[in-house]
Length: 194
Image 1 (cartoon, rainbow, N blue to C red):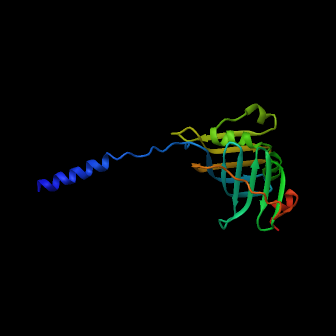
Image 2: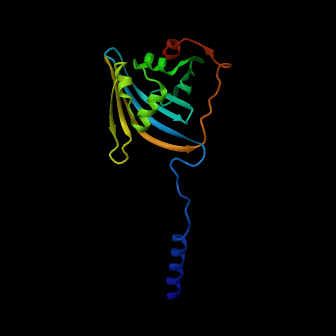
Image 3: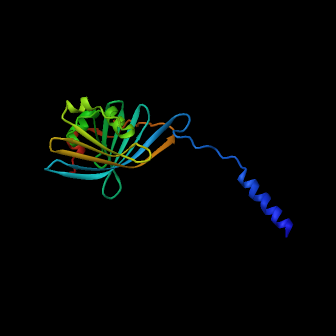
């Protein structure tokens, strides 16, 4: 009986003394961050809601816009402030500035860097946005202090972004050139449902 107890204690001690790799946030080396976002938009004339998955590193970003059937409907690739919006169903794309896309989509003039600062760090450039007529309100997580809900208002436009998950992953964002496979089109055609 004593032999069994000593053997059991030895196994428990051996398991408890194993070294574990520390989990680094963010990971060491190249990494990217992911945000899962639910959005609601209302401007008095139209309503939109959906889900976006945003992956980004220090230079590039990739936004995946999901359909109600949980399929990727649109993909937005951004290299700095230059954006390419892809419509997979129509096999067309639009190239332009990120701020132009947000203005057309939701009536909010906001560049990618400002959006990233607001959603990731909760830093709102109040004077810059106030000059454009945009107000921003944040609801931060009580434990971490980082934003979990961000609400943008400009005139009748009201956009609410709810961040449901944040993750860090090793690697970097690779943007694919679709210009050889897809046809260029205007923004309205790429965004349209027909």
